[in-house]
Image (cartoon, rainbow, N blue to C red; front, side, top):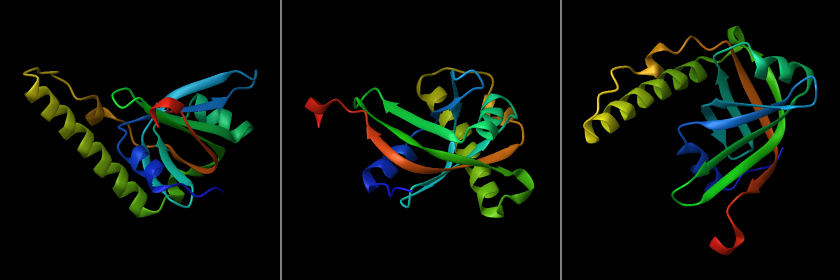
Length: 153
């Protein structure tokens, strides 16, 4: 496991979602959007997955996984590469479940505030309809790749 710099941790904490990539049974890449519940400097990332679909099946067969996020405005991004394991929902610590609920509440609040500022009314808040998480993904980072172009550093 590789420790993460404060800069990388702060960057990922600001992201509303990340792209999680896993390898399917044919060797192809499956990418999906997920939210990080917790990320610590030691290099461990916790994500809750709402569905028992492709990511779940892929991780059961191959633990290799990437987490990618980019900020278009700052032209900055990172890709975390590592191995993940699946933790059953009934084995989740209460603090992780609480963190997830808080994260959903923040997402709903941010959407409402953005709608008010832009004088829009989405009329719906997809985050409010999220199903209960089905399992947790715990990834141990082996490599952190800085995606920021060299000339902008």
